[in-house]
Amino acid sequence: MGYDYNKCISEIREFDKTVAEAELFSIGESVMEKKIYCLGYGDGDKKLFVNGAHHGLEYITSAFLMRFMREFAGAVESGADMFGYDVGKLKKGIRLFVVPMVNPDGVDIAVNGLDITNRYHRRLISMVGIHSFNKVWQANANGVDINHNYDARWSVVEKSPAPSKYSGPYAESEPETKAVCEFVRSMDFDMLMAFHSQGGEIYYDFDGLAAKADKEAAERMSRASGYPVRTPAGSASFGGCKDWFIKEFGRSGFTVEMGHGKNPLPEERLCEFYEENAKIILSAMQELVCLE
Ligand SMILES: [Zn+2]
Image (cartoon, rainbow, N blue to C red):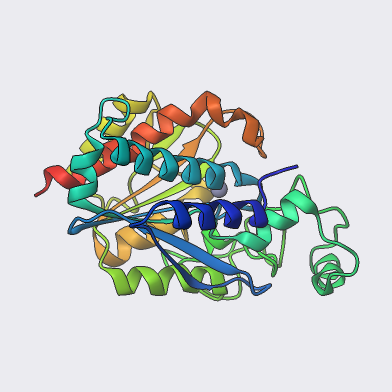
C-alpha cells in the first residue's frame, strides 16, 4: 500500500484536530474533483509556501511534509528544538503554508491504478495508450504533467497526454496548476519550496533570475542536508512551480529532490532521509526569520 489521497487527508484532518492553532482549507479541486488541501501554521509576518507531490509517483513527499508538520508543531508545543533549530522562534517569525499533495489524482492513479468502473479509466487508456498506470504515472487525470504546466517558458515536450512530461494545451490549463497559482497570487509569499523525489539535490534558479542571496540560501540548505546545489538543465528547466514563482514574483523559489533510489520511493524509506529534508525546511525558515 502506498501513501494515497485518503491516507494523506486522514493525516491532514488529524493534524488540524490535534494542533489548536492549525488552519485547514482547500485551495481548489483536481480534475477528478478531489479537494487540494492546505495547512497553515505559525504566527509570523514572513510567509513560506511548501508543497509536495506535483507528480503521482512522488507521494513520499506528501508523507514527508505531514511528518514534518507533526514534528514541528510537536517541538513547538514541548519547547524542544528540532535538529538544533529554535522552532519557537521560527514559528513566531513565520506563517507556514503546506500543500502536501498538489496532484491527488496522479498519486491515486500511481498508487491504486484506475478501477475499470472509473469513468476516467477508458478515457485515459484511449488518450495515453497504456493499460497499466501504476509504476509510471506522474501526470494528473488529464495526462498533463503539472510541473510542466506553469507559465515559465512553457513549451511542448510530449505532444499529447502521457504518463509524464506533457505540458498541456497551454500554460495553467489544469485545475491543479490553477489552484496553486491563484493561491500564490493571493498570498504574497516570501518564499516557495516544492518537494519532489528523487535525486538528493537542491535547485534554486530559473533563467538566471535568482539573486545572489538565493544561491547563498541554497548553499546553507545544502550544508544542512548534504544535498548538492544545482541549477536546472534540459526538460527540468521550464514550466515548473518554482520557475513560475521566481519569474512571476522575483522571490526565492527552491525545488528539492528528496531521497535516492527509484520512484516510487516507499513510505517506509522515509526514515532514511527525513532528517536531511526536515533540515532543508528549517534552514529555509531560518533564512526568512533572519531577513527581519
Ligand atoms: Zn517530480
